[in-house]
Image (cartoon, rainbow, N blue to C red; front, side):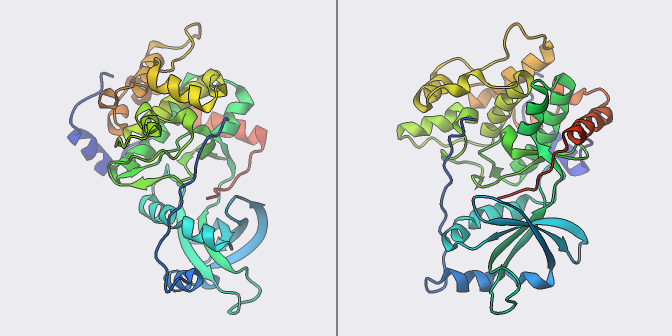
Length: 342
């Protein structure tokens, strides 16, 4: 993937160089201000009525927040996924995520966001009442699903997928957003073999964070240190650690240490040596070096997303278009189909 002129300039200006489930997560709750305590009135005033923007299709699924529909964006003329959230507590809790999505949307490696809307039933009784969240409709599968079809993805596939994720993380870094939950289940692979970062429920604004939100298996040591009642701030390089763990999973099909109890897992990741590829695997020196760079326990020695774009494992992919086509063919064989949900 070619970098934009803006990204190339940012990369040149980067100081320094690189020498190169158990799902244990906690969703944070954000309480935005409301008008006189009435959240429905507040959101109805904050967000436009969706009927003029979308034609609502049929229900295609559910997620923890609400019901998922497909729909048609009238002006953009594209199919979208629409999550309709009726629960007022969930409507309040998702406000920061919507702000993040609006900030980072528009990049080819980030799931597109088409806005938030609010429908009050008396206006058009035929449409479901609630907060409507419109995002890109993706046919394909998650990276987790792709791993499940092959057990090991092979170096060229891993290199391609990591490059796309890093390019997306580079974009988040420029926007001062930390994702906090980079893992195969939150990476979407489209039916065309494109790679997109999704699920921004734990994301935070700002260059620093002390949040412990996320999935512990993929959390960096500096993140886990905050479980011991400290307030250690860290930066976007925590997402690079998560990518390194995901790369091991792509290579080996699973993570041997993921079956540990929560306490033992935290102790291993904070006090033990960094995870690595099994020594008997037939992996290249460049790939092993990439993993070791991503999993530097000292974040000051860990490369940024900008720096990793020039790493040999990432910058010297052979036949990138062919790799993308092969991944797309694999998904077609698996007949994967998913849409982004919040």
